[in-house]
Length: 137
Length: 94
Image 1 (tube, helix red, strand yellow):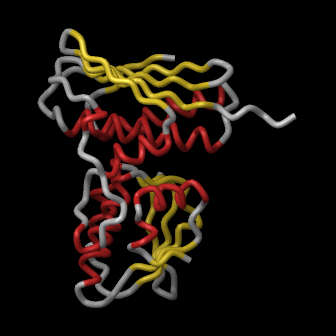
Image 2: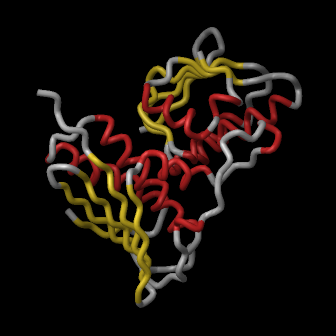
């Protein structure tokens, strides 16, 4: 499944519908559904936040095989920013030292099994891979 | 759909999906919280980092007056989000 979404936080509603259709079609469980929603929201909102003036839509594709779900987000006409080089988030900081922001990418790294980054011809591609647990027999 | 309600005891009840598109609505509400308050997550299905940020800002502001948000009835996915973010260390979670 593949679809383009306007670069706007209010696109999240349509993105969640798109994800729900994928989850229902592939009979994925609620744990996987939660992870897909969280990971896609965090990456998409980052893409929106850091390129507000960009008029290009963001392309999201979803696929599944026996062992994993693969999500690709294509962000055209942007500078390269490797998600692996994002500032490390420290979850042990006391309340007074914390500021909003920075936790989204950390959560994606915690919930998603594999993250790949590619950049070519001004297009940033983030690939998120979530391994699926085999059903108990 | 995301909703914030207050019950007769003054507890805040969250329901639905607390995502980045709901931050404006949530801030309008939480900015008015000025004392220790229970936040009930029983009907909340989902929260992202945007929702965490709203709660963090509120908790920091309240802590300056020795007040706090107490969170309860989270589903296991939301518990994971709080644990991975280290928010289980800065909130009382029941």
